[in-house]
Length: 265
Image (tube, rainbow, N blue to C red; front, side, top):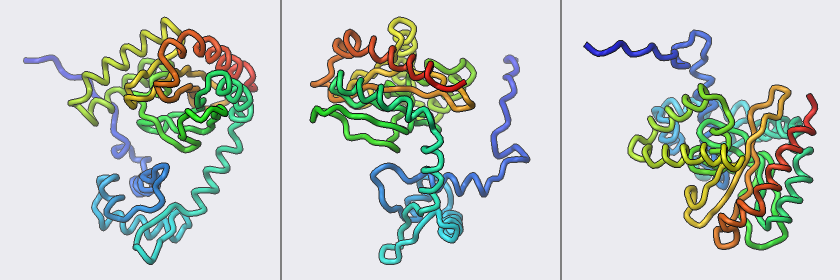
């Protein structure tokens, strides 16, 4: 007889304090991605893994509250101004953006790359600040863009910096979402952990996109804010691994340390 498996933590839906209807409504809002203007109930249902009838009730409620706007001509939905108010309120209160931006811009100019500040949202890192160099050869990602935790340098930096319990929980979720890709993903994460210990940064050289290279470093902003990370990235033909590690890496570490030190405690 095999050993008894350890009991798993209760899922959110098993928690009596967890409001499922609210969670589903927020999941609908989270379906909208950067660059997408409208989504249909069918598309929302597929992304949320919910019945279309349930999604229809949610979109109607969210529309009445101003979080969605119904487009009569197409029958589709777009994010409403209530979402803009929430996002704007959060961004204006993120003092770390004001502190980080001048240093990030200097780093962008020095490297000829895009420099981004990100925070984790589920299985992604979402950019809350972004600076570009004057060079034409930079990425066009902007505030609100999402990067995958497992394959991007900024996501790997977050994984390398958080505690073992939080990291293991996220890695378990990544594995459950894509079991077939997990061995390759796990190898990339394990390698990034070694990079973080050796270089002080995580790397993604063609792992997120074949023609994109990047390095990143995480930090704790304090004041109850979640772990954040700064990424330097761009086209691989403009940013070689050697240049990023030899020239950019020391400056990135200096910038991140300076941001962390400048945060009010």
